[in-house]
Amino acid sequence: MTGKPGENVLQVQTFGSFSLLWEGKSLTANMKSRESQFIYLMQLVLHNRENGVSRERLEEVLFEDRDVGDVRHALRSIIYNAKKKLRTVGLPEVNYIEQRDGCYYWTDKIPVVEDAEEFERLYKEAEAETDLEKKTQLYVEACYCYTGEFLPVHAAILWVAQEAKRYRGLFCICMEKAVGLLKESGNFLQMEELGTYAAKITPLSDWEVVSMEALVALGRYEDARKLYDNTADLYLREQGLRPSEQMMELFHKLGERMEHRHGALDDIQAKLMEDEDGSPGGYLCSYPVFQGIYRMVGRMMERGGQAVYLMLCTIIDGKGNPLEEGPMLEELTGRLEDAILHSVRRSDTVSRYGKGEYLVLLVNTTREDCSIIQERINYRFIIGRQRTGIQYYVNSVVCAPNNILAVLGREI
Picture 1 (cartoon, rainbow, N blue to C red):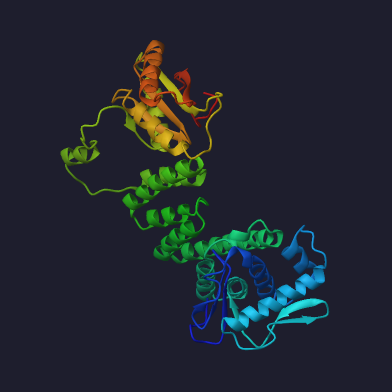
Picture 2 (picture 1 turned 30 degrees about the vertical axis):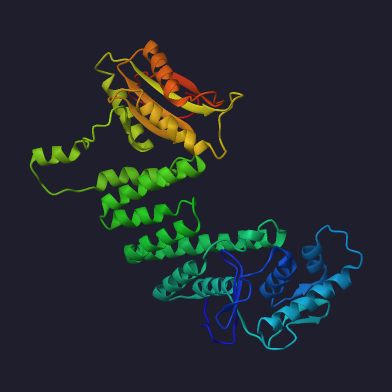
């Protein structure tokens, strides 16, 4: 927000949280839950300074479905107490909330700077600007002005939810326009920073793709690979989601574009080797790597007679249903990973597939061996009388040279 501490400007923050600042001091820092009606009143009146707020709308938000005998008297009391409170916290003594033609307005005598209004102003200026450099700067400024969801604590209120959706949409537009212009101008450093910022304030929205694309363009392949691994792990851990198609495509392009200086084969081979940490058990990898290994194994089966099985391990509750939510899921998922890795051979491949789910590629084994492995996993996973367990799906990997596992799914 613009405006500095000490200026006679009321600063209003609505993105990420709600706060009022006057002369550098917070007016809402120590608000108690019983003062929610004051908060609701201030949010509505300050956010709708230009058009005002009708009495009906104020009554609807402030009293909802509560049985209030004299609603108009109750509304006048709330406004009176709000004015009294504003004087108490140090605002100049003026008529803060004015009534005109059945609507309530914030007074013009106390200027207001609101982050949401500033964000929308920058967006509109960027849309109208013709100079590409200025246009880019305005879109980028607008993106940084958006610091989180609009009034997230009060998202259940209808008008707040509607505005939050609108601002979220505008932020996406600003990001897409800014990224497009930065890409055209070759400013990948700023593009990477902007992607990082967007991913931080709107988690699990796939903005990591922006940073990853910028890192690839800058030739920072190792950083791009680390970002991919961290993002894939975060999405699986938080939402049980696999990386988007766009990020998967970038990951594969990353492998194509990686360049290395000419070197001795021994040095190259040393870098390719897995770090010897002495840990037993299967090879744990990300889903795209697992997919590549699966396809490679499928091709190798064309020449050899090895039996290969694909196993899906899913955590289930006491009723046999997949466990998709709950405070214990993350801890159980970690235990399942450990149990699998210590129950399979080093030549077997393991990948997390979703919340409480793992894929295991078992090479040169038999159906009977799969049952033995399941018993090992159960032995390490199940403790005492815990009600949760593991459901197993096992399929033989059939050689199919022209169509080798485009997408892994639950149908296995």
